[in-house]
Length: 65
Image (cartoon, rainbow, N blue to C red):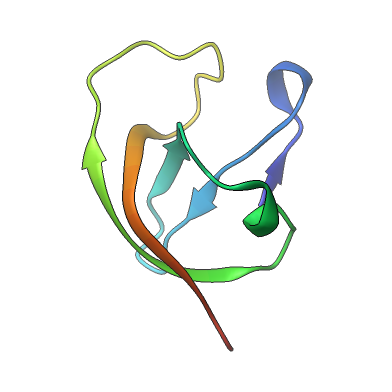
């Protein structure tokens, strides 16, 4: 999902309602409404986005609805 805070960025809204702020989301997946399955490692760092848990994606794949 495109988030309009802090100049805009793409974040992931999980089916569980959690928000994830990926540090390495590929350009090809930066499109509103794209559904993905992913594995990530939590990063305990501050982010200018101030939105969601900062994570580094280990694996990610596009899935269909």
